[in-house]
Image 1 (tube, rainbow over the protein chains, first blue to last red):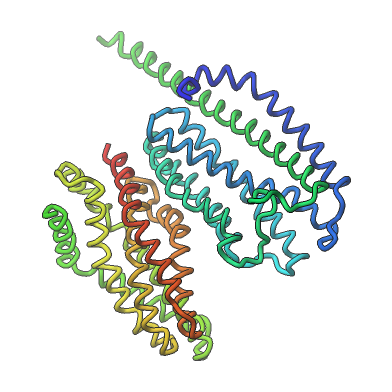
Image 2 (cartoon, each protein chain N blue to C red):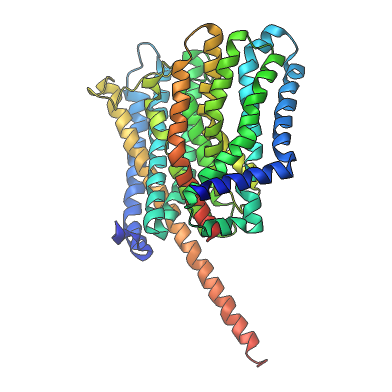
Length: 249
Length: 221
């Protein structure tokens, strides 16, 4: 892992990986959407509305996964002080917030015809809403300081504190008797979902993951280039100051 | 241990001599609760139904308002750095400050809660659970709040930011605190909810000082 903490090495590696991730994301999402919208059978109870699930479920997985990624990156940043880990955590936060929002909105759209309501205050929905606020809090905290390293450090601590929410989200449907259905894919004893629906779901999940990876690399690369640009500008200002100060001496 | 007690004593003395702070928090608590009968109407059944929730939500906000007192003043006048230099570890310092904070804000809130619940026509069975639940819940509020207060030290618009960070983390305490009172009024055992509140407190007791101390360290660098 320490090998990849070097920004220059990361730039080289990501330059090669990014086109593959982007192409993979486009391919998997295209196939996934085709399977989900045209091939997968309508549910015997939910009818065509079940197709919302092919976006909702991967978005929900990614919302948790992005937070897990952010928390691990923050831990790495706090323990080994790798600057790249800070950048990775900060780059993942808006992506995770986006996935969480997609998950909440699609869930709400599905809930209206199925449950007869846009929103219920059950444990799963509430804990995901809290996750969304944690993302927002993290983003706000990171940008609230004049000194970027101080913001990064504070954000890292917050990301780790907020990680207590992740198991609550995962197990909320088991611990409480919720309106939200219990786990049907990642559960002991194997998935209870039919193969005809599981395959499109997994294709979509791979597509979402590759999309996340591509955007994440893009955002980290942008952040590295921005900091290089800033350093170059500062260097110019210093040289300029020296030349101005020069003749006066 | 004596250093720990000295910090608690110092904070208590500061709070008592400056006087108005703890009283202001309770005054906010009372005023905010009193607003609700005007907002939702004075029907006793309606008020009795929402009493536990209103008291808890308002207590949460009152606790939130008092959080900037935890480290902000000490940070501004530099005494936080002096305290960090003492042999007392930062974690113990946070714990001591949380204890003093709870004694000056959490405890008055717990004591004021039954009176306000009476104003909101809470059923008789609900009073003891309300006090017990708040007694177990408010220390968690101080501890979790200390993490937020330490993280936002020196931030721009720290007050608004603090509420964005801390309120989502307060939600579990609110849920189980209100549920305990509602269960008692419905005649169901409140032990499960009180146990969960106690579990929160026991988890926050070691973890929150760790996180807050880490945040303080980066603020003092």
